[in-house]
Amino acid sequence: MAKIISIINQKGGVGKTTTTCSLANALGLKGKKVLLVDMDPQSNLSQSLGICDVENNIYQALKRETEFLPIEVMNNLSLVPSCMDLSALENEMNNEPGREYLLKELLEPVKDQYDFILIDCSPSIGLIALNALSACDTFIIPVLPHHLSIQGLSGLADVAKKIKSRINSKLKLEGVLITQFSHRKVLHRDVQMALKNHFKGRLYNTTIRENISLAEAPSAGLDIFRYAPNSNGAEDYLKLCEEFLSKQS
Image (cartoon, rainbow, N blue to C red; front, top):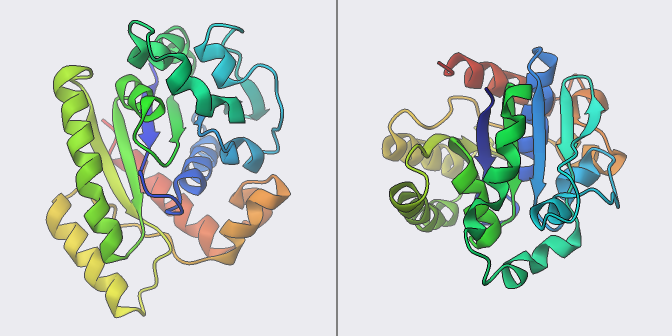
């Protein structure tokens, strides 16, 4: 039975999509079967994997206009792509009973086909994020090593706490991941220490270093392991994958 994990932060530009894509591909390299669900109307995850303008997307599936049909991207890795129309979901489903369970209902029948299901969330806390947190077992928060990024985590923590108490009692924090990290910068080290003290064992020891290859790979429609397998980005995400797997029961 798959473990479902949302990669979420209401702040944009923190590496959510990069982390979702790279961790999924690393898990695939380790022999794990992974399903990716693109729940961001910007479709950056889909585009990063070279998938664009597909009719059977998550928006249509959530509205029950098409079947839930993952696309096999490569060995051990499948994707349910997104589209711009997903941004209209909140208004269209405003009066729909049980609208927070739309994604969960789609994932239940396929959970036994995968080891992990990773959900790439949009940078906002609305119906899309609510569906992701209602459907998942745990969530990962990528965060930049800046003090403003830390301050923004309190709002997400409050939302997660409410969802846990009212909708999804099993929801818990999988981990916090620092991205675009430079050990040479005092600010980055200070933020790392603050996060370590605050999250008490939930901060990954692995940090994702600043790496241009991670920014370049999506434009080629490739993951970091195919685009630049010897880069710092590939090395860091493979290390994250190993740390992530070591914590799975």
